[in-house]
Length: 232
Image 1: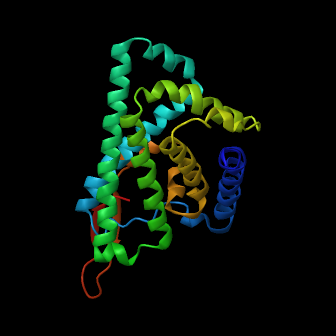
Image 2: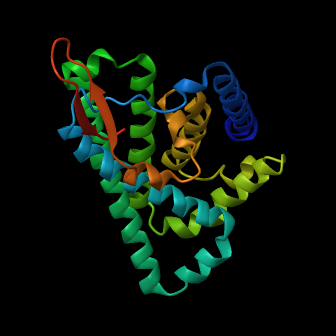
Image 3: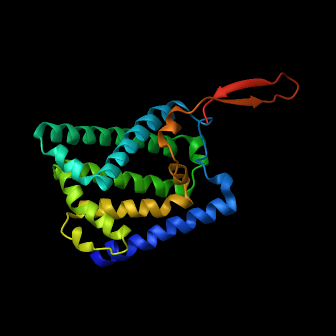
């Protein structure tokens, strides 16, 4: 089973993501960005979107650092205090992301206006993201010092996949919750071109959080035209 999940499926899902992204951009590039629902409901969106994006993007950047500079991570963790700071910071960011994601999920499933424009893809994305965050927190709580064993097991496996020599043995002995976290991440990548996750693929993800105001012009029949300032 490990050979299929971590030796074959990575290539199937990666190719699905690449081909799907090209197809979507070529066939309907105007759906590439996430459809905004801020006009439908704004308060809960604000309290969910900011903690979710800041938490999850920072965690993803940390994972990328471990992928590209694993020796530096091990060197940093060689001092216990720095290891504690890294682990506690990652755990706090995980809970921040979970809080934001739960708020966004609650909004989408309970607000009648937002729920009316929610598709099956949106529900699937929420499920995938919830599984990813919950299993990530589970790993952090149940199996401490994850930043150390991440660079010792998951990172070599990822490089073996990227080198087209996938070696499932690197992750074969990891706990079930960790394997679930890894495989769910592959599903996340495979879903990107076919859902709102497409807006995740940007050169500067933090720019999304500090984007400028957008002026929306409303036309009222028989009355003056008004400018409404809002976010994208």
